[in-house]
Image (cartoon, rainbow over all chains, first blue to last red; front, side, top):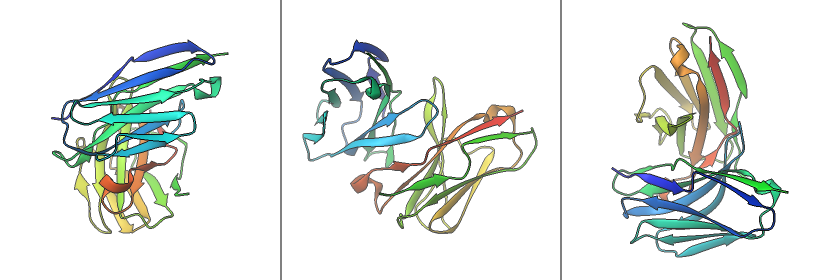
Length: 112
Length: 114
């Protein structure tokens, strides 16, 4: 069964820091991996989608990398801002189980 | 941009009521999904549909049913609401094979059953 973990579970940083959120998954047979952001009480907003054949994707201050063979993805946020405060979830699409499995999320707080 | 619209942000219903949660997407997506999200349990798949009139059970279908009469609309039905169905409900859609394009989510419905 595909299991997804995210480390750390919570993170508090001062504004301006660069930071890395980690995602690990047990089954490396994935089609793609998507990173989402969720604000309290809201739905999920897609940030980046990495196909299994890609190593990384970038959008503005966000960069996501994928190492499928080791079952890892990282989300790098540059020059963090208070508006980045949210929960970040990774979601690999498992080829073995033909479904997306969501990680538990990392709760990020950026302090002004 | 693709939009997935959930008709209600907040709902309060009584135990035993029949509850309808509506989800509409405006970009001709084939695939639609219903999840519930609970603290400590994450997102869990209730039902999904890859085409009109088609439905498949997810991981926790008990107590729920769905309807997809039109491609753009996917309804989640709680046949007889119970307090353990108090949760955040999230609808998502994707084009073609979800492997290619990823998911787009609605803004969620916070359901409280009293």
